Every structure is written in C-alpha cells, then in structure tokens.
Image (tube, rainbow, N blue to C red; front, side):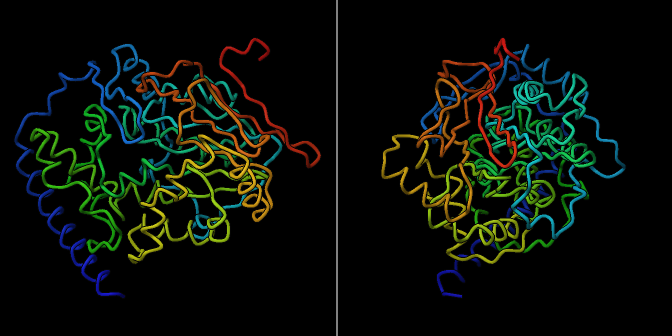
Length: 409
C-alpha cells in the first residue's frame, strides 16, 4: 500500500474510533434526558442542494398523516429484524437477472413513502394493504431512498418486504444504489432532514444490532461529517446523527444488511439500470464495481484508488450526468458503444430530475426516469407519478411511460 494510502487509512481508523467513543458518550448522556423535541415537524424549510435544486426537508401535516397510515401497514411477518435479507452471500454478487415479460422501473423517492406507494399501485405491483400482487412482475427502483424526506425507514422496510414477497411467487424487486445512499455511508449528512433523524431513535448506541461487525473500518468517509458539522446541530440532533452514522457507516447494520444487497450496476433482460450513468470505462468493470462496493458496504473493502473513484468521482456510476442533460450525438455514439459491450438495448438512469416527466434520448437508448416525484422537491412543474414499463414479447422489448392520470389504464 502506498504511504499516502497508509496515512489516509490511519486517519480514517482514528476518526472511526473517535466517532464510536463520542456515540457511546452522547448516548449515555442523553438516556436520562427527555425525548428530542418534535416541534419542528410539520414545518417546511428550504435548502439549496449539491445538484442545484431546492429541497423541502420537512413535509406538511397531511403528507405526514399519509406516511403514518402507510407505515402501519408495512408489516414483515418474520421473527428476524426486517432488514435481514433471505438472499445468500453468493446471490448478492450477481448483477444479471432475467425478466419474465414485464418490468416496471420507478425513479428516485427520497424518503417519500407516499410517492413510492402510488408508483407501486400504478404498476399494479401491490394492493391497498401494501401486499405484493404483481405475480412474476419485475420492479426496479432507481435508488436514492435516503435524504431530504422523512420516511426513509418506511421506504426501506416496504422495499425489503416486497422483495421477499415477490421472490416467493416468481417476481422480483430490485433496488439500485443511489448517490445519496453512498453519501450516507460516507457519513455525508448534508441533506438529512431533521424529521428523518427522528426515525433513528430506536437504533441508539445500545442497540445490539449496531454492535455487530468489525470496529476497525477500512472504507472511505469517516471524516466526511466534520466536528463542526455535527456541533452545528443541537444536542438532541447530535445524538441522532451519531445513531445514523452507526447504522450507515461501512459495516453498520443498515449498510451491511440492506444496502449491501443492492447493486451499483444492474442488468435485467436487455436493459441496464444505473443511478447516474454508465460510461465505456465502466462497462468492462461491472462485476468488479459491484463486488468492491458491496465489500465496502459490509466493512471489508481495502481503501484504494479504484474504490475512491467509484464512490466519489463525478464520472462514477453514481454521480455522472453524461446522458441526462445536454446530450449530443457524440454522447449517443459513446452510449451505443457502452451498450454493445454489455449486449443490452438501453440504459435506464435516475439521479437528474426531469422537469416535465420521464424523458429519453439517443432514440430510446437512454431513459431518464427521475421525475422529482418526492414531495420534498420544489420547482418541479409536473407532480403526477410516472413509471417506465419495459415489456418483452417473443424476445423483443418495448417501452412505455405510464402516467398517474392516464385515462387508458
């Protein structure tokens, strides 16, 4: 390992050790306090995010009531915690899956379980009781379950529950890793709403599930949220931030048991699904990208330039917007080369909100399906839920945008 990497790793391990000590100390000191104030819930505030959009970080009372009603219906019938997946270790490394004829792709949800539920109902994947009724339908959700909204845990629970139910009847629910999942594992909490932090109160420092796995992490990001960033929150929020850090750090129980079951690059049938985009240099490294990211999420990856490039570079599969804005013929030519290397027909991406709904470019070679459907976005002119259907009949696939107010449904 290069000396610079050794120094970086030493700094990282030191930061993690300090973080664990602080978490324990803060938790012990807050156990005798009253619960964190909930007075700010129901009020909206705006922040300007990294991607140039304005975000509402708390919902209205009506939206919260909808979310609460939905949350009560998300019941996972298992003695194990909801986040524990039935998938085998070997299966988690697979990234190619068949389609049974019909596939529905759903864009970014950002902690809005109401919007996710509407999309799943529109897809006829679930009923009003949030039970899977899609049979052998395949659903792909494009990631960014976290940040901005207040319903992160209900979103994670619902997708986990439906994955298990769909698998039993020959269907599937796949979730692609988004850049906001990656940011949380890097402990970059700039876009976490105060309302969503309250969801992490049950996952305090004394929760046994948070203590599993090695303490000496070797993934990047422990220093991402600086002492100044943490101290800018009030004391009750600090304790919740520490709980969140323990959940999402490399090897944390939500990182290792939920996020690690997701793919950075997913191929289903003749379509490839990536949150940001897929460049030619990625096409020859899909297996390696998926494997390294998963090992990082479970706390087992060594720090190297390849990992850093994946999780932080603006040209990575999580961050690039190459095919989502200002696309020209050179981009289309490059995309066709990438698709041919993977022997697929189209690329489906999220990440970059489309102001007027789902769009495509390069004669359907790329579909951009992040419509900003989460309630926390402002400035989006079309609020109706939209999903992308990809149907394969006799080996030939076709695409169709299904809209919430489509009278033909």
